Image 1: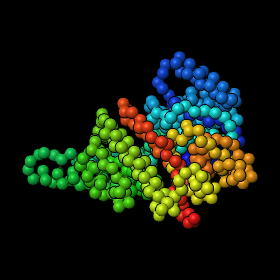
Image 2: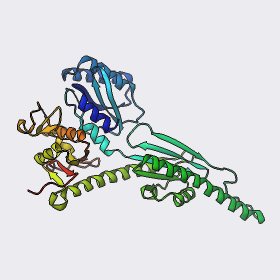
Image 3: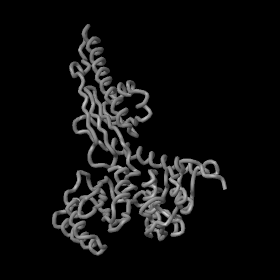
Length: 374
């Protein structure tokens, strides 16, 4: 599911049930049944209709192909699953559920904000496997196999007049194979426009491939020194490179949005709840920046069923009948409905370290056009 589909659903639907919980945990059947009964009881206590409860438990029973841990976000309306999203890695915060006109979407948006479309190229001297994937999703979007010529691929060590000729022929075969791989990668990058291209595999094959990639691909490449295509290969180095690169990209995107919001004496940005609400009401927000901890704070705003989607009080609700909800949820919903990007300040603390005690950062935004000077 992409944000455009969610935007349409939030605009058109009435009351629905939302559920943010763990994916499959690898428990024995008895423990799973106990956990599902407990979840059903909590959903009932929260006022979730019986048909939505049954549909949610049935959806969770299907599982996913993601390894443990993983997270699920479901939206159910009138006993039917409208969205069922699975994400690799642990939940970003506590389990959340409820039923009403304004579902909690921040858990979902936090996962989406961390996603990147990537291409993984695992190459050797015979060809390559090329995978198009969205990081954190259970299944690749596409997988391509490039199989080149495999005659005389190994450089022979025989002596005599034939030795140099065999050596040259083997090198030519490798070059031709990597030229075919490069053509396939160039085509896939033009078609899918990924954020990163990870290249792993045989050392010489990688070198030949990188020399042949087009200029639109090279800036996206992250080379991984691991022969992942060899039989019995260990993918740890590739997985670590992907994780490190994606975390760096997340930090870069956040810093870029914050810098834009602060340029020209903040003429291109808004800071604080009132200023951000005003910008959202005008459709002016390009990127909304929220401290993830705002979702558990006491601050509230009015969520509106129609434009301008959010208000600080009845007096600026333009006559709409608003509902008081968590401020972060109201801001995120208005941003989504006005086609703005939502990024989160995440406090990622290494295991074993204490979480820093700091105030929650105020909501801020970079704008599509500069504010009028006051």
